[in-house]
Amino acid sequence: MDRITAACVQFSASRDKAENIARMAVLVEEAAARGARLVLLPEKWNAIADGRELLAYAESLEDGGDTLDALSEWARRLQLDLICGSIAIADGDRVGNVSIAFSPDGERVAAYAKIHLFDVDVGGISYRESDGTAPGGELVMASMSGLPVGLSVCYDLRFPEMYRALEQAGALVLTVPAAFTLVTGMAHWEPLLRARAIENQAFVMAANQHSDPGGYGMPRFGHSMIIDPWGTVIAQAGPTGDGVIVAELDLAAQRATRSTLPALDHRRPDAYTVTDTAFAPYEGGA
Image (cartoon, one colour):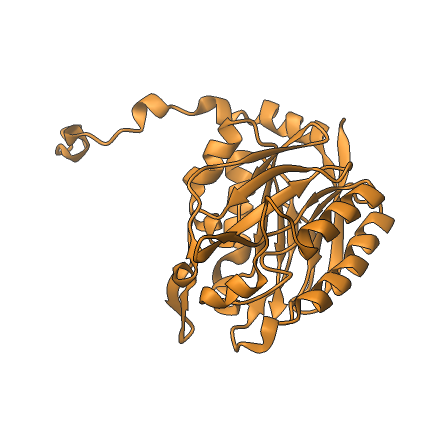
């Protein structure tokens, strides 16, 4: 397989879970109609909430739920490798913010719980994701029609060591479902996404929410993107509006990039340890 058509869905969730599922069904259908075989949805698209309010929307990986059933049906009927973005999965008295991958036969093939939780103060707003969400504790790869895909969620984007570990495990595509804020998005969204693509010579798919999901007064940045291993943005949505972006992932070109600029092969992990000698005074000539 040298090429695969991929899509990211941009969305602004309401507080009505059934409505969100119905609206998303239309967008997933559009992605499939435009030829996409690998589709990524945004973070918390079925229910945007924070803290323990998310428990009311949570589903179970063991027992299923309306969202999980819909995702499985879409993947099977449309013959998609479908990454759900992320949804709330029950975890005791909290939830996990979990990205789940479905194969074209509708089966769940991987589930990744967001490791890095968004506890920050930006733009005059205090975000405390950990109030109602339990962090994950391990990296996860998904095999999507034989294509190794590294899973992540939103705030994970700021931790490059995570993506390097996924690349070293074989990831050719990195997925970033998000609800990236307007303030941080304006400053950091595109630079961080392009950096993750360039440094790992990987495709990056980033599906974001936009506007003010749920009407909480916490605006999101939009600008969903697909980026190639050279760091070129090959598809991008606008700042607002639900919609679908589509791009072809050229795996032969990715191999060529890794061959002609073999930075990944030039890594020197043996030299990446800071010792006392790192602070020794310079004694060389002028």
